[in-house]
Image 1 (spheres, rainbow, N blue to C red):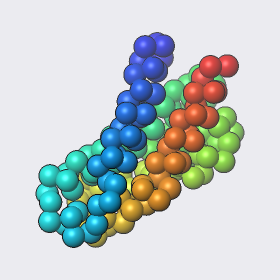
Image 2 (cartoon, helix red, strand yellow):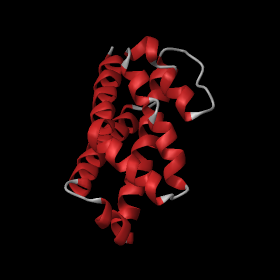
Image 3 (tube, rainbow, N blue to C red):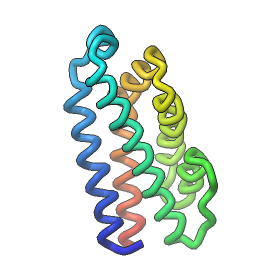
Length: 136
């Protein structure tokens, strides 16, 4: 991957994690359920974060000359030997993405809560590990 494209993915993840944290801060279920715009913003941002993380994982695999699997979860999990155990913590985000695109209100609220509690932290740690690997 060209350096510019890789930089764009990394920058995008950093921007979107900050945006998600800002938009999700102090949101309660009642807010989430009653505000369609807020719900769509959080769901779309979660989806975009997962897709960008999968893209980054794929780039790590390509750099290592490894096969890129066909599912999002497998792509992230396959980076374990390159990036360490953070791949195991980050892989469940693929499930969140699949649930989010179907827009099940209560499931999506749980996903927002998960992202606030540990998902963003996991993405940031995955991002740092991937950046370190790709600089080698």
